[in-house]
Image (cartoon, rainbow, N blue to C red; front, side, top):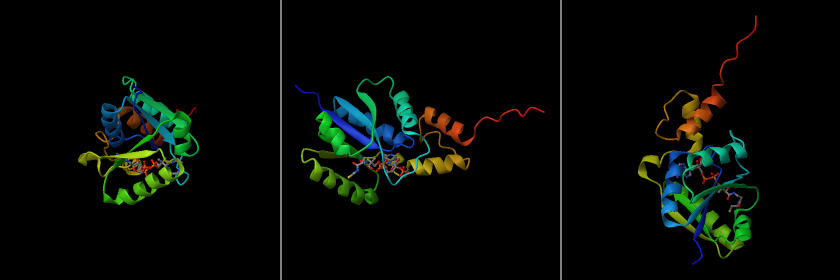
Length: 168
Ligand code: COA
């Protein structure tokens, strides 16, 4: 039987525990989940594409079902090239629906074989976004249970680089 493969695209700047939850649950349903660090042309990112890929890889280092890749271009083009039909997306609140519905329909218009599967986000992550995480962290708030430790360490390095000794 052909293995079932799903792609979970996003900008992941950076990955949060909300994303981690969606990926883990998808991996229970599909044989392989490709986490695709894609480009959202409307966003200026804190982490480079390679940094975002490395962070996700280290979170899922012990999960062979999860593969992490990056891609510039149309999501459906990536899918078509690899004969992947399923896109997974998380829905946090009703406010996500319109944008998600628009993307799902557009993706299917360009690649009719594409099907989008929506997973309801766990309620304790329904208010989390990468932007809000960065903002709270930068202003000194605690995000311990909202992001993996590697992400917290990476943000610390970005926002609070170690002080250099100044030679006198
Ligand atoms: N838990 C926590 N946060 C979540 C979440 C979850 N389950 N699901 C989404 N989020 C957050 C994200 O962190 C993101 O936060 P941010 O806006 O502060 O960065 C926000 O919700 C929106 O996430 P998402 O909807 O996944 O947007 P995105 O920018 O991460 O991804 C792409 C959009 C990359 C999938 C889309 O632009 C794309 O497919 N690009 C490729 C080009 C293409 O094909 N374009 C045509 C699309 S029709």
